[in-house]
Length: 69
Image (cartoon, rainbow, N blue to C red; front, side):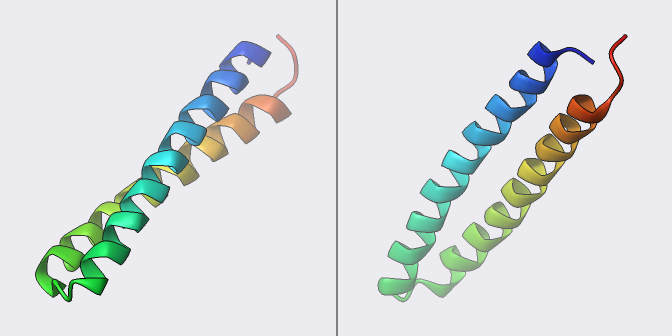
């Protein structure tokens, strides 16, 4: 795979990490407000974002390690 594809995957991972940070901050706000129901929803969203980040990083790693075409 090309360096461009690797960079694209890393860029998507960075975007997802930023969403992860923002969602974590929302979770902290909800926890401080003792809004347990909403916090549980946000925890689910955090889990999904973490999976997406992991997937993008795995793609980037595979592309970086792939032999040149």
